[in-house]
Amino acid sequence: MPKTYPLFRRERRIPRLLLVVEEYVPGVLLAATALIISADVVMRYGFNSPITGASEVALICVVWLVYLAAAGVARRGVHINIDFLVNRVKPRTIAIFDVVVEAITLVILGVLLWAAAEYFLTGRFTALPATGMSKSFVTLAVLISLALMMVHSAVFLVRALLGVRDPRYRRYASPIESEEIEDPDTRALRRVDSELAGGRTRGDTPRRSASSPTEAADSDEGSDR
Image 1 (tube, rainbow, N blue to C red):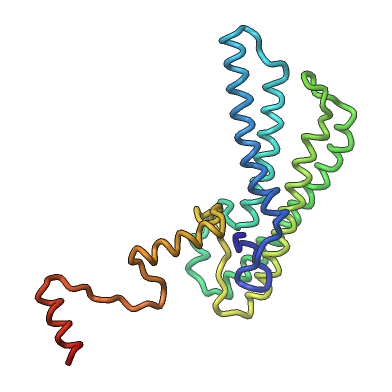
Image 2 (tube, helix red, strand yellow):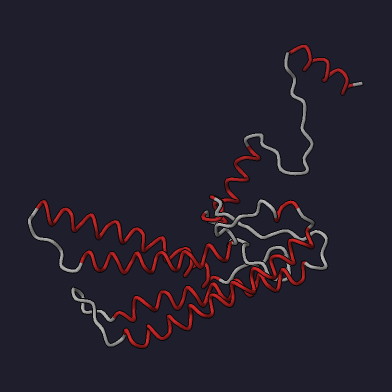
């Protein structure tokens, strides 16, 4: 499991539920959206029989995809930000700046969460035209996303408050890496294969290989001596 959920330590294992909701589910929704749209296009133009409600279901998938993925990006700390001036100051100043930013972010997210909750309560009486699904189901994605982003922002706020006294404070940012989606057993086998193929791990000293038979013979003679 990737270590991308910071709290009091530099790296902390994230709960499996967060990983599933914020990264795996959006991936499944993206694939489902592509399949639904493709199937609707084939049925519409190939057989003159479009799938009823396909565009509406695809729209719902996109809404859930965007908002859940936004929460995952917030957890990783890689939302778009301008850090041209911030990176030129001392680490403690960066921590103070992050405290202010996260506090403002929490206030804004709280206001949005309140508005989304009101819209959720009123939208349950309205149904979508094609599928008959309640609009509150769509708004539920917004509620979950805002709540998760508030949790992540609160974590970063605590981290920044602790960083005010830490001269080594750094902003947290963890982009998605290819090794995070690999199975741990697969990574272990790949590491063993690399070592057997001549690769060296961290801490190993490189060995000089004999470039010619003469050098090999000289090294053998030196070892015999």
